[in-house]
Image 1 (cartoon, rainbow, N blue to C red):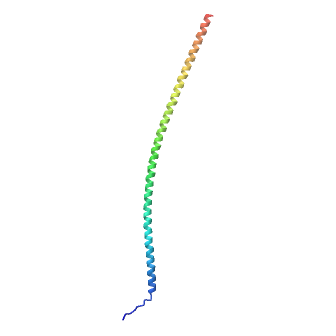
Image 2: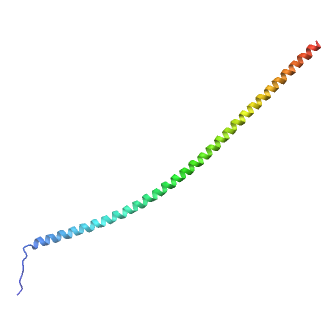
Length: 120
């Protein structure tokens, strides 16, 4: 004859078993979510690294561009200085020529006056 055992805690054990199954399901779900978040973080880190590379390239280009602009500015400043010097030299040359022409005309005028005074 078989002896039946009635466990007075049967309902409690089944309830706890169901609770454990629910907790296991939640833990599995959370583990999955943590893994997904970890993958997303890795992708974000890759994107941030790529952004850093692009920023570094941009900085290098900017520095090179700044150097190019600086060289162009120096060339323009040198050209301007040469033009100013040329302009000053031309002005001095013209002033000298005008002065010589004035002196020459004065001498001619004096000679003409002397000539007419001698004739009269």
